[in-house]
Image (cartoon, rainbow, N blue to C red; front, side, top):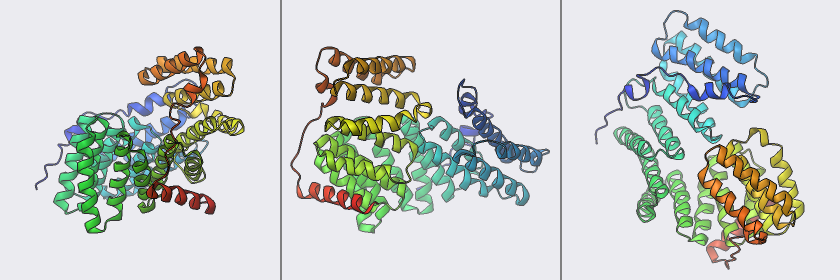
Length: 420
């Protein structure tokens, strides 16, 4: 199988203005505007290194960017990534080895992806791909896979499919079976997102069988995790739980393991196993967790508290989330207002619940979040009609555990007991 690299023009023919970072730098009231400007300055300096590492003034530009980053307060995780990028760029200029830039830029893009700053992650990957020399190397395969994955998260499915195909071709040319399978898993994920669940499952089961033949636990875990999502979408909830929990046992990467545990909790909640679901979410919360996943777990804990009539727990998680309001992107803020409104209604505080849900409607409308707007308006109507518990617990379905489901529940309890 031959590989035809994407032409450099697909990402580099037009100068990169790093618009997502400039937009963040210009947002009124954003306390990290200076940090966003620092990212812009650092990435523009890196662009110069990609164009010509021996060019006039490049050493000065890198030093100026580094000085700016050193003076930023607070020194956030983002600044740490940026300073590492500048440090490596200075080394690239010194030794004229462009390959060095792949690792720090990939790490920064991955961090941005985990923070759900998808436009910024794509921008950094575009910067990274400017260092491609048209060859087939492990770093470029990884970058193409990440590019495809972020495009998928952003809902740009046609572009994501092309990127996955390119990554698969590169991996095949290198004899990198694992990366080729990860690309195929990604493509199956696009089928999931677009509703072709039957074909997605068929592809994932094929990959799972091959992974088990090769005893490749990484690919097996990825296939199991995506199969769990497929089973969930096909309303096979108990199967989804056992698949997601098994994936969490196989993952070595902590962030992937925590995502699988979080998904296990979501499926258990929908089955009515609230205590086990809470165990899953608390394990995630008590670990070193990406902010986006921590937010999702807190929202789920808020929901579980509502469903089991635990008003004390509800108030605890409501307060924890309110501390993060100024850092929530619009979609998370709307989700928060909806869940709080639902909980308040369930606990009899209907007047405040209506205020929260009206706020959710306004926010969703202002930010063009159509699905969230529909959800908020529907729940608002339900509460106004005098049935707040219906709004609070649309999934009150308890399923007696099968041996596989019971094994997952007991496994979560054991993990929670040892504080893992």
